[in-house]
Amino acid sequence: MSASSASLTLLLPGLLTDAAIAPELARQLEGLPGARTLLSWLGAATPREEVFVPFEAGCTAREYWWLRRAGHVPAEGGKPGSALAPLLAGNQQDDAPVWLAELAHIQVGRHGPVLADTATLAASEQESAELLAAARPILDEHGIVVADVQPGRWQLRLPVGMGLHTGTPDAVAGAALDFWWPRTEASRPWRKLLNEIQMSWHEHPVNLARERRGQAPVNALWLHGGALPWAPSWPGGRPASIGGPEAWLHALAVRSGLSWLDTGAMESGQAVPAPARSSGPAADPATLAGAVLELPHLAEPERADDWRAWLDALPRLEQEWLAALGQALASGRLPSLTLVLPGRERLVTLHIEPRPRLLRWLPQTRHDWKRWWLPRES
Image (cartoon, rainbow, N blue to C red; front, side, top):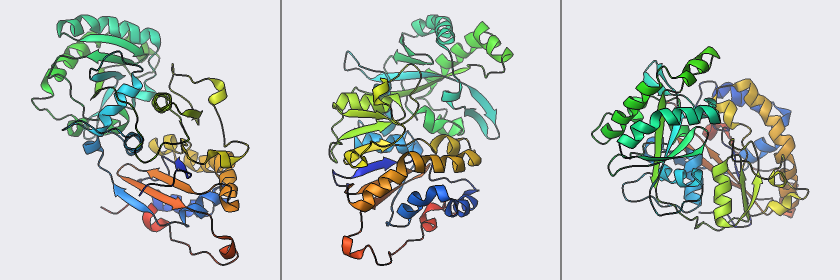
């Protein structure tokens, strides 16, 4: 069941965690003055939970939620996450599959090779250009056309049979690559190409300089995508506006003709005009009715297992956004609120409506939010 078109939808990635420290976080969260509004919402509604399998979707739960909400339907046999690449690549001039290759670092972990978070690699424009120059003869030899999208990201036009989407970089980061990238016949052409590129980069001046500066070398390309360019259709109802912290969300807004609110730091090279930026709701939060917004305050601390930063981010989230929205909801100026909490292997949705005036002075039924918030024991 979709939320009312007048409902404000808030995505809060990072609020759900599967970390072993979750019970202690719940205890501290309950005693945190800067989380009062959030706690009132968590206990006010019955959650709707979905099991989420990142490998089957080929993306994170938050990426999946946005792509599904915008109306993308993957091709037969394709994964939903393949649709992210056309948004990241910008406007496309033809109707060909969009493949992206991200500069990456693969390290050896306890369970084999692991893809590091590509966002932390921070390859400069010059580094990206020099590594592309070294790789271009190999790409040409394999019949691959390459274009530089932005530092650290290239678009490839691949021969038939070479493309293989297993997962977006965010979905794969930190996980064992042997699970995401099995040694199958389908993956062999790209593995062969990547091995040749890795050899050309092994002692490349860019990587030698990075190692001297204490930075991880660029030793891989992560391939993802394969979907055709697509237009958002918003089958659950067209939002009044959308907002979030990333450039591909801005691309969704542009392609939909929707107004945009930047709620966090955009990707480098993909800036949005300053008037579109905001650190909190409008002067009248009721104007956000019908909007779909992603608030990134908790995402990075949860991803990095930085729980002090996670707890510190909650009062900022309350001060910048939630307190004003809670007041607008309680007064009836905001018709309703839908919270979407994407976790690593689940999606939780809460729909919250203001209490009728005649019931506001009576005790409100509260749910034990910890029963669904805490990770399931395996």
